[in-house]
Amino acid sequence: MHNNIIFYISLIVIILFLVMLAQRIKVSYPIVLVLGGLLLGFIPGIPTIEIDPELIFLIFLPPLLFEAAWQTSWKDFWKWRRIIGSFAFGIVILTSCVIAFVSNALIPGFTLALGFLLGGIISPPDAVAATSILKDLKVSKRLITIAEGESLLNDASSLIVFRFALTAVISGTFILSDAVSNFFLVIVMGFAIGMGVALIFYAIHRWLPTTPSMDTILTFVAPYTMYIAAEEFHYSGVIAVVTGGLFLSERSHSILSHLSRIQGFNVWATVGFVLNGLVFMLIGLELPVIVNQLGNISLFAAIGYGLIISLVVILTRIASTLGASLFTVFISKFIKTADSRPGWRAPLAFGWTGMRGVVSLAAALSIPLVIHGGQPFPQRNLILFITFVVILVTLVFQGLTLPFVIKWLNIEEMDYAVPSQEQDVMIRRKLAEESLNIINEQYADEIPRNELLQSLKYKLESDIGFLNHVKESDTTDTGHDYITKYQSITKELLERKRTLLHQFNKQEMFEEEVIRQHLAQLDLEEEKVRQQFLHME
Image (cartoon, rainbow, N blue to C red):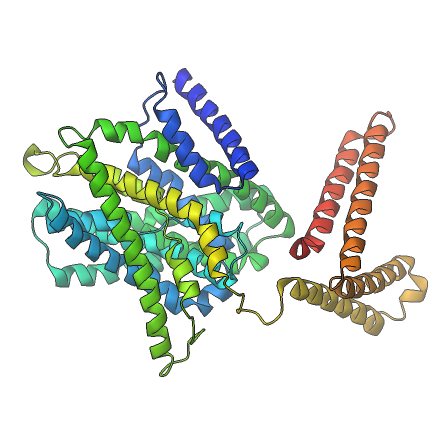
């Protein structure tokens, strides 16, 4: 036990250094972590890691899905709901069918049921891999929104296909009508349970006297409650978590205080980082275990099967996204669509974002060792190996080449007529103007005799003048120099204030708790300065 704790602590430290390396070489960290785990797994003396699929599904999946849902824009999600739904369900089912027939024809002794099982395992792209790569690229917000929305739902559809295929392999029977009806039942009831649990937590946040720490803990309890409640009745825990997460996120401004939102965001960012790092590292560490389990299957043949299946997965996704673009052009003649002319560039780029990840590996590992009569589960070891090859090929090959594909396609941002930086300045100026109007119209009598109100008025007027100058300066090189100089001087002043506070802290007349409050305020001011020009960097 003691050695295991030391090993996992060491693993977290290694993850931190690998993420730093990824940032230095400008490569998405999931790719570096998988490759790092792969190399680490072959080092003599490293403990053998055997991933418990229940651990992945129960411990890792609910918080990662909940965090992704919390960060998702409901406004954008609803705008692109049709294409997200078609990708999350339609393409997953199509990919499962293609993989089923290809693997059945390609691999000796591989039945159609085993093919659907493999298809259900490797059909969903990974949420973290795609978004972590896309966020560092200058791509259309539409592409990021659709990728994030798809990744929230595709795990549900793939795991449902996986369940039905697993039942068919074990029982030897498959009834299509029952499968279709159960498919919709699992989704609808998962949605209902997620909403029901979310409403309970909404009431707790809204009407009970919680503190920021309590609110943060409740946000961690919520996804596990949603997931376990749905899975207990054999419905989709993924759909339940996504539904509940979107519902609570949309209402976070009314159920959480500003301190709860700040504290919760910081805690979730840290926990999410650690969980994501661990799962991608564990994927790489699992390869030696999978290779050793191949048994009498030739490693060369297994690699060949994995590469062919990987190619089929990639081509199927690209064909599906391009086909969806053509269908959108056709259907837009009859119904209103968010974009009636999607073209081929954005769909091709989206097709190249189909990196597979931890859900696929966890699903493969959850295949039972034996079936009825104590017989070994057919082709289990080969399915595990093919799954790992698909993850490795799609994550590393597509992940590394995605920046070049995006650059080659040169996709223009067409979702918003006003650039992000202009939206930012416009919103901040409108907010300041509205506040100033309220003071001038409703509290004009108070201004002459209230010095604090006078200071607030002058500050708002100064902010409006500052924002007008920013808007004008942003269009010229000289203006950019002014902004850079402003940031530099502001940071210098903040550092000087910190130095003075530390000097005050050495004096007996000042309490350290008061000093810490002022230091925390300076941190918030520095972040505000950074955010002011974030879109202009």
